[in-house]
Length: 99
Length: 290
Image 1 (cartoon, each protein chain N blue to C red):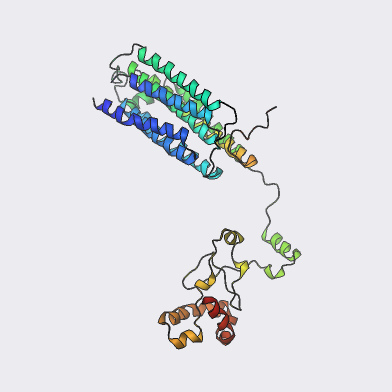
Image 2 (tube, helix red, strand yellow):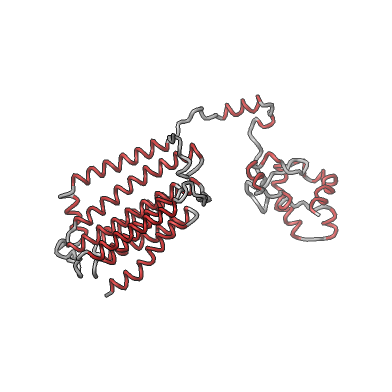
């Protein structure tokens, strides 16, 4: 099967994730949209790895997954901390640094 | 052929899940639709000769990361949802426009690029199978990156613990402190702790108040929060004491059997409410029950 449909699907998922990051203001949902973008990137990596018959693309996807796991741990801890002090998970409410 | 069928069946689910994440009002629904998308992606990985990544996708992403998200949603509040008011004017319109532009650009690039009709496939690269090939790479070429990533994971775990750790500002009141406080506040009758909730033959839970010696339910024996939520039950429902009227009318065997079951507890816990006072007590309870 040609790699093009996979790549187009990856593009669509990536763009939907970007739209979510741009429009949603619940920090958790925005964060999940970032995860969706990472996953779309992984799909492209796996597709290209198969296209070239080279395992390195799969390795990169694997490392992306590991880094995403670390990112989620720290990001969720930050969201929980902000929620504790401000009683809100909206990205609009964390605006103390705004001039 | 089979792979194409699989792709065209599964890819709508992936896109629908992603759209559900963006358009769901509640974060929980978004998390569940994202889980759908991730599972379909795992299927695509397996279909594209990456079984190791497919399994890792299910275990790590849908298993661990999405559950972590659900836990945090639970902490933050399941009801947390966005308000629909736009804080920046025209933000949604311009975001949609930009995203449409990105889709058009990248799709054009991928469609017009000269890609092979059939991928090379992994057979040449992984003669011993996918997992063995990945293991060779992880512990060979990429061993340094692997070590660094391990350090990153540990740092992330420590960071999460420091971020969510809460220092106790006051020391936790001990039993002795609580007893002293009760005396200071002029409630020596509670010095030994509050009374326990009611124990009845047919019901034994914290939502039912105990009966005082005079047969009235004790306010102090159930949690204030339960009362405020309206979750407390009436103790009359379960404290069934037959009145002389009931017995004369022979209303039921069940009444007397319930009384029998109640009896030992009534004697130990509420001695004053037992037989001698029945005459005085009856009118009140009978009236209330009616």
